[in-house]
Image (cartoon, rainbow, N blue to C red; front, side, top):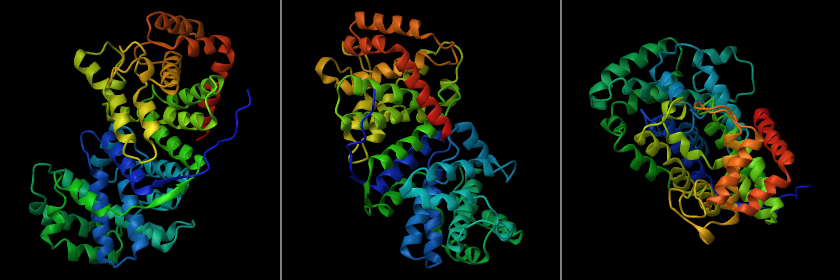
Length: 424
């Protein structure tokens, strides 16, 4: 079947909403240490303000600070970074983060900042690349802010103001080792004398402070390719959460897209279905790694935790104006037409064809892939389970019939999706 070209010309979407969603998704990764990106962003713009940076650089500094750790999508990896003393290879998540934002045109210019946010200032002289002077400054500003926050997190129960002298002493010592730009240290020396700088690091207050700073809307025209690139970036973050979910989103996307066209959906509906498929599991970022990778039977409490992920997906995607359908379909991917699914217990006509397709594509791909508690099933075994669920009134029999008619092609489409993910 020849897939039509996209019908979506452009959609006006607020870039600040997208970055806010990315930031919150990363907060979910750091379940035991939330708001790291927000604190770094807020410190960074205070430093930038003290340096009298122009507004465009301040905006980039804020956005880059929020998502500087986008390359670390495992709770374990992120915790290792937050616990580190510049130990090990700090560049791995920096390179990965730069690669991810480079895939999304509106944020591509932030890649150098993210790539070098652990580069020591003195090391820039030996780096031969195209990084501009302003990009080095922004990267080092994030590096200093990141370092301050990591030092503060060592004393989670202490008043940040009471740790001021200790942290200043450590940072000044590291600056003598050329880790930070001298002018940046001058700015830090000024603002760190202000109690407000330390009070603003209180975890209870940071959300409100960030919210007031990020009130300015930045509505841009996004093409379908832009939206798909955004969904790709987020899906790669999602699938990197666990080795057992790796590539899942791309397989679901390819199968759902094929089923959508086969079911006669419009080109625009299929475009949005692709995006919803890539993002349907964004809520899993909020599920602890140990539950996702548990090889044994889940407890009742653990099942309750993991059952929340589709609601979380709906909740976070609903915050992007223009993503209303995407949020609804993604949030419904565990709903059944007899009302026995979750989290909303929708049934019958309350579930659109797109929602029904995404549910079936998710089940088919999940059962076809290894999981901690079982090996991948054959396509014949998977079809048998789908047929049983149709008999129970859970799934749409017409859509499952499309898989029967095109089984080989459905398996091929999932393989194409997995290969596409690997290329990214």
